[in-house]
Length: 402
Image (cartoon, rainbow, N blue to C red):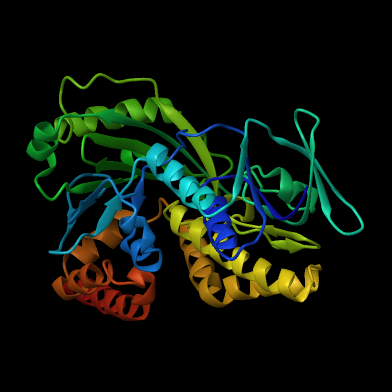
């Protein structure tokens, strides 16, 4: 069978694209190397703008819980920045349930799901692209969407490759916890905690309380590390971080430390996300926030944009690189400015981060502007031109006091 679109990778990017395509009657094939349900390396925290843009997430009960308070701690733990709101500041998901739910939405609308094989090769035919799977079978499709993660095979086949010096690396675990313990430790608000540069790490640690789980992890941003510096042992740093959390009474003292999980994500977009009959989405396109590692929002947005581009290209029967360039143009129009700014800032992880928090703590209006922006459809990024001038003013006032 010749498919209209074959999507490699059934994570949030691929499943979003498959859902939209199948709703339009496009013959879509969704491929993934593992079977569902399956877990992914992730904290499971979603910014609220994800829910504003993709309203069907809440409508289909894919959200596990919400947090209405947020606390950011300096590395010295001498200052902490508090955000409180009557509205949720962050949504939480269990990736095993969330990803399976997204795939179910796609197949419910007619997308075909095939699991258990990796893509071994991709070749161009006269009127289609041919995928050769690890079991030797072949799939032909008029268009390919590569959503197969950081080390994407599809990206490599079109000459794109993620550099090892522009990645974030994380170690985490998700601990089952009874609701009463969660309420005692994090309140009814299920308060989120972020610790900047714990034990010298060029990155941060997180505590994400959910309904009956708490996700705890650390992340390091390789692009901000001086090459001559010795890389941190993340497993050791994670163990130290757990001890810090116990001292702060943020986790039970008798918490049983289970085997950790780890993963890597890109911190730099690919220079090119399109080729003849091929589009790259999510981590495969390097579309992860280089400052925080947030990936689900950008994955789903890129899947949406790729699907819309594919629908138009198929309708017009123009599936060459030039006609697909509209996908990258749409992405650049909406996100290029933010990614450029965050990319520059991400290289400064580890430099004066505590100082930035101290300055922000001293300006109540700045805190209010940020807090009011978080639940909005555009999030903090939309209000950055309110936040940046206010921060500069707060910084100036801070200097004059010294």
